[in-house]
Length: 375
Image 1: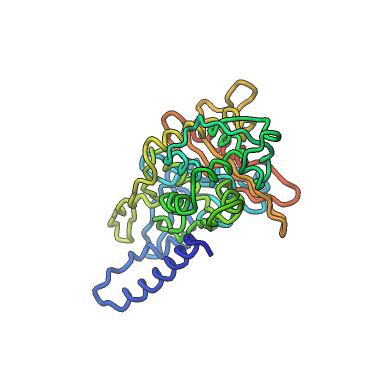
Image 2: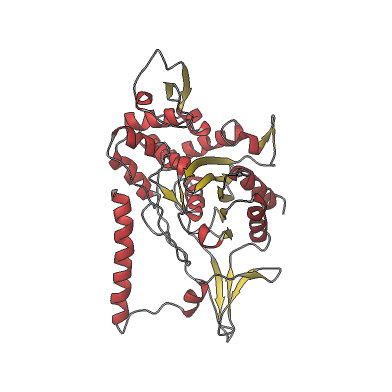
């Protein structure tokens, strides 16, 4: 078991023990009564806002948009995915505008897949690797092999930049750079900075995303390139994209706008904490590379019709796809933010398709972003 996975387990156990200890203290602060009722999460819209009623006759007014929340629900239903979730976050203040999929939105039920390349890319940039750094390679379309980590002039007939590799999700390029410049400790530290292994600060129950990083060699390069041994929740995917969009500072996640009790007393919960995950320089470099994903990379067909953008704004993003054989599940990810040059919203879509397949997450993300920008 990797250090981050052990840390996550320890965190959950410590949290449980701490909660039990606090319960024995007479002066321990009590959780507000509405907090436990919100955990059931049964919101509805009154046309102008999304609320959840309380048993005392009061209500919790949520940050969810009465336009975007039903749009996300509808788009997930139309995708035909066996399992699915969608999250949209306001970049400036962390308001959650859409949280669709129930517990699947806050649970790391799928591998992070190539979305984890963002963590690897952040670690590489912080190490001083330029997005223009060129790598000559062969293969790497669906795997990373041992010979991808070494120079083979007779095979390495194609050369592209680090930025191109991230946009195209080219496994050999990312695996090779991670092998050359990173170690397990550095990659784990970057993952922790993005809150892998920790429960996100959120008023609903959440499970930590995980990253089990092997010490070195081919296994390490494969994890760095996004092959198994990591997990990610859709909420965390949007949080990751929002962190990059905010210049490397995590968003203060907000789901509750205000709480009104049965007697009409109103309170606004304090904002969640934030911290700096990566430097502004690294975040800017990542944002620029993520724009390539939708302009010419792995999500180009979803966001461009030939030379024309399908949306009125540029979108920065990262795709991820991985198949689980038994039971067969084709995971499809898209995380990103828009407008790329001045971010307003971050989005994460995760679809789990059966053998019959279905649309890619990037297409659903495009359609949800279209609702936001045409409201």
